[in-house]
Image (cartoon, each protein chain N blue to C red):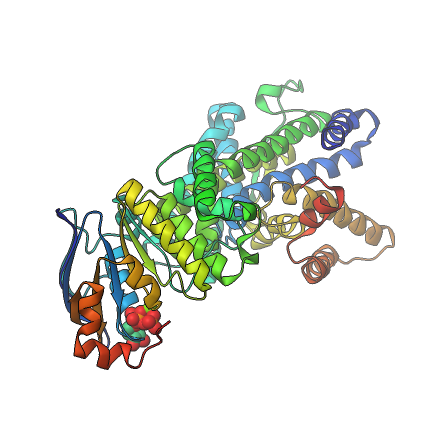
Length: 319
Length: 242
Ligand SMILES: Nc1ncnc2c1ncn2[C@@H]1O[C@H](COP(=O)(O)OP(=O)(O)OP(=O)(O)O)[C@@H](O)[C@H]1O
Ligand SMILES: [Mg+2]
């Protein structure tokens, strides 16, 4: 049952570009990006119990660093992604060190993550090398020939890239959840005092979660940069980005492997469909998606406080 | 026998209150040692000082000759001190087995080995049937047993048990006493237990330390301390005796 379900889903996802149009593909690409970012955030919050409201920082660094390396030095984003990862991990380490060294926890830690993202946004707005507030534009390959090693391609190409990343991230989380590190993260999340008495080094466990999470989030940045091909600090590092990416894991189920997947699969298409509907009705309501997300979040937390996936898994008998 | 734990003139002050007042004692390797005293005597605070959850205000604590006062709790745990919490602290979202695995993961990097170890500990404490239950769903006596199981899974040299028999039925107390005896005999695990259940103290402990208002008022065999007039006055006469 479980295997049949999984195989059918994998087959459908692999074959989707054969039947899906441009619009449907763009929505699916968005879904996969949110799966990737949601998995990254879920590691830190759902597994290690550390609330970050500044994950746009890691995604943004993961976008800007490979983009700049490519623009100025012609470095392939397939290599640049690692530089972006390093930058994001460095930022994560700085935030983590401050938070852990000075015992800043819970909502105060979340404020710290917001502060770092905001500071970076302002800095990037004024730095000439990042293109400043005017933005950074990534031209398509001059000869007009798509090149996979430069992450230059159409929607079908990015469909498979983001699908692979989302699946990879989910696989990594599934593996981590069963690893020693994952166990210790959950223990620290549930009761840091008890965990410490059982020999868990709180600083190390929390720092590991921050580093893995920021690294994973930065990978989503490469897609942001090379798929959309323009970057503005005011968008990339905006707090609404940080908020948006935490909705899927919360709605799907914190601290579960498939929660972020289920959450993104429901939320993103619903939001896009709603926006399209409002647009077609001739209304100009840019905030409609945010309001809808907010209402959905309240509804889910109301009826399924631990998220949709744990409940769905029981229903399907696959938990 | 050599002293495994040496507590020397240890004090802990909470603002105006001297919760532990210049307490000294030693516990030999392999000993079964009890700490008793009325509510608020400073027993749990003493454990917190030994396990590193709180730093002492004064005094030194040695484990196998090495100073451990001032170390972090995880460092002290790694040196072989396992402790339980009087106010139980399970990992609520994790299953019973996973809770215990966190303990065994201190000694093994592999989840599979940790799992096998956790299963053995559960078998030993007689709640293998609860393995897959979330810890949040356990009754209080089972949570107390989970505390013991988790600490045991770290393979401690010194096991600090804080009122793990409170709320157990007499037959369960006897079973726990037998289990602790067996663990002590097989692994040479040194056990220091805080206990109000005098039935367990008398059956288990070779020596007993009595605290009152943070200070040591008696130290000796169970028969010796219950004969001390000050112990009778401050504790046995008034405190809960089961
Ligand atoms: N973290 C703390 N901050 C302030 N006071 C504390 C703290 N911990 C304990 N105390 C106080 O220290 C004294 C000793 O408390 P402790 O918990 O060690 O007693 P106990 O002997 O374990 O009592 P019981 O038998 O009720 O468990 C009490 O007066 C308590 O209120
Ligand atoms: Mg106590």
